[in-house]
Image 1 (tube, rainbow, N blue to C red):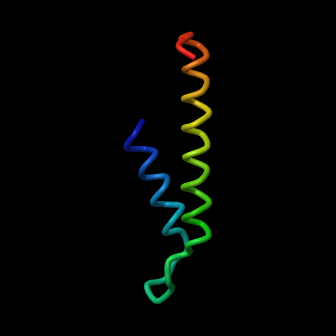
Image 2: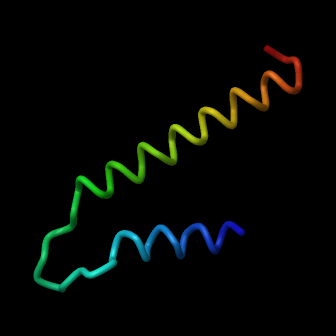
Length: 53
């Protein structure tokens, strides 16, 4: 599952990209912030479910 997630991430980052184009930082920041947000929500849900918070 983890390998699939990395493949999907790299596919999104390199989709329709030529070698001459600079990296699309807006897309990179959007994907990174989405991953962080999902991780924080999962951590919060885990904490609430386990009763440690």
